[in-house]
Image 1 (cartoon, each protein chain N blue to C red):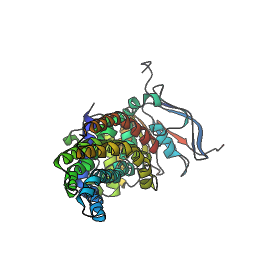
Image 2 (image 1 turned 90 degrees about the horizontal axis):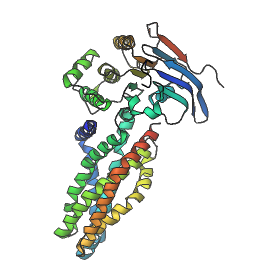
Image 3 (image 1 turned 135 degrees about the horizontal axis):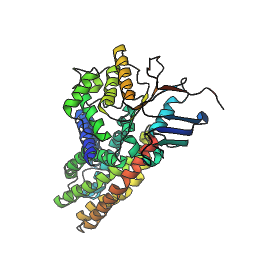
Image 4 (image 1 turned 45 degrees about the horizontal axis):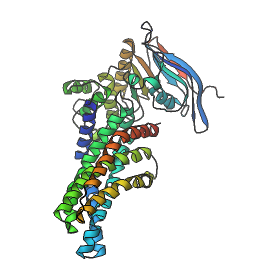
Amino acid sequence: MSDGTIQPALQIDALSCVRGDRVLFRNLSFEVGPGELLHLKGQNGSGKTTLLRALAGLLLQESGEIRWNGKNIRSLREEYSRHLLYLGHLNGIKGDLSAVENLRIAATLEGFTLSESRAWEVLEEIGLRGHEDLPSKHLSQGQKRRVALARLLANDARVWILDEPFTALDVAAVQLLQEVIHRHVENGGMAIITTHQEVAMIGEHTRTVTLGQKHA
Amino acid sequence: MLEPFFWIIRRDLTIAMRRRADVFTTLIFFAIVVSLFPLGIGPEPNTLRLIAPGIVWVGALLASMLALEQIFSADHRDGTLEQMLLTPQPVALLVAGKVLAHWLVSGVPLVLMAPLLGLQFDLSWDALQTLIVSLLLGTPTLSLIGAIGAALTLGLRSGGVLLALLVLPLYIPVLIFGAGAVEATVSGLGGQSHLSMLGAILVGSLVLTPLATAAALRVAED
């Protein structure tokens, strides 16, 4: 924003995180630019989720800096949230509301209006045809995940942060999600994902960061 | 700007309508607590009239606290709360919407029920009117203040007891002026000054508590 020529990017500078008395990662620096996909790897407990939560701005204490367009996300806060879509382990959908209601409320909170007909379209695209109107608590685990993932299709956020997005999905849904992520990156978006599945994250702009290799 | 605020209220009201049982538990708890006192103390009308304002108010206070736990816990469990913190909307505004919805569901029924319970204590019409007004001004404050405690105890194992310890002391001023207003009416002094104080406390908490609650929620999701 300060200088218009620079493309928006997410910079992570000397980020360290301590949970309890355990160092999860130390002095981590990397950058994600437009059209790039970052695959975050590491064993269980190596701090992947923590790092993603830090990138989303959910963690309050960490040393180091996360910058969006050159500015610390702490000072940007809502301005940064506007460009961000975070999907964690929890689906973030209400069991008492239907898929359509869930999707429309999420959209309103994210600052745009999603018409009812568009919500139905998106849900059909994600493979929930015939389940749009049911209370989400009656859906299966994989279907609930699909409701959550439908936000990716409805949203135009630049940065996607996806924590294990492939869990509970069937083969068709995994493929669909891969396509969706691929399309997003092709269109100049950024995606940061963790996954244990060996999914073909195609594209020359895929980078990997592996956590927990060297410990201090 | 205010659209998300109204959507949050609508969302929470819709959910509450689909889980009506939760609303009734609070209400029945209120009725039972208040009805226990006449049974325990005996049917002496003068004694009952004397203790009525305090008992109805304490009952409302406990019932309101009982309902508090639900205000954020479900959203915390299913992840919608962390999503709320990540939206471009001011969190305090969303909190205000949630508290308002919570009050409409748990506070307003208490206000409507209170005059019925007051009749058990042989309260005069004037006293009943003051009781309604004092509860109308007081219960939103209880929800607003209680929301801070609910946010602070999110995700803790013995959250319920801790919530009571945190929140009940903060309820004291509301209790004093609320019950005081009714007492003053019963004794013929008029409860206006007490009601003004309740109004002032309400305005103050309306401005300050959503900010505190929003900060507490950020800590809870850390």
